[in-house]
Length: 439
Image (cartoon, rainbow, N blue to C red; front, side, top):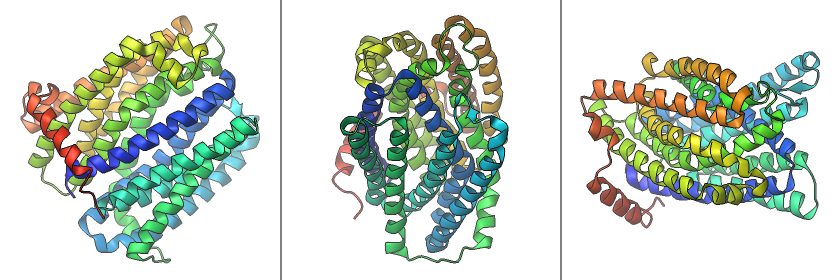
């Protein structure tokens, strides 16, 4: 399946999930207090931390291995199941052992939410590792429908728990978990129904995954800390600028808008990665160049919309009590544009072996961002975190554009300035691709 057809199907499913998640988040902002919203947002980011650190390398290695030999898909399915179960059990045991030393509180939230975040994170590991196989196998409808099941189940349960039964944050967490679990079961069954399943895992294949995985793990860790450092330090370093969890809740509104725009670059990067691992470098450079400059265009247009009607967007995402998120959101917009574009270039390099010059940079930028948070947040609160986010994103973007320019030989304007013909070509291809999808 071609890049644009795969992109259009995956993007369509992603947009449906976006709507479902928007409705979920809207209910949560309406029915939970700011402090509970702060707890929920930290829970969400911590569960993502678990899934990324322990699972993203595994997902990416699946793409590499299945992309080269689809006959290994049944064995990869067995490895997916046993790896997720094993790593989940080990993390839960470690968490329980450490529990007495935490006083029941981590990052200002009760320890039970950390345990639930671990459970959600390992379920996501299995779901995403299964989805990676579906993607490489060209089963994009089944890949996309996983998102729809996940979002629909979570929304239905939140309507029951929050709107009808008036229950609290614990049940919001349960709804999220069962939504992800339902999507995971669909993805897993989709694989074994087409390719069969081996219960016996293969250590040999797992070691091949590991040969890809150690660099991928470093790369994912760097990306996560760079993007999420503000969420975890905002409360503890808030000083006299406001309640820590409430500030996290306000920042979460800005972050939701960032995730909205990031979704297109994430889908582009994921589909691009699955092609790059099967292509030569020259082809990958050209494809990456075109995707990058169009992501810049897309992000810029939507950022201008955010600038013009930001308060309406904030109220649409949450409610009027979060209007103070407008200034932090405006400060964050340039960072959103640059981080989205940089993510595409970063994904291309991931597909070509995770060079250290790419995977180490986010750690160094995170250190700079942490220092900026320490300086700005105690003085100007959430706006300080947004300012740090934008400065970090711009540094990362300029660095990646520079090395991409040097490695590819492409001119800077070819990389960052969209062209009219690209826009027309992609829009027409996506329109046509929606009607010619995988069966």
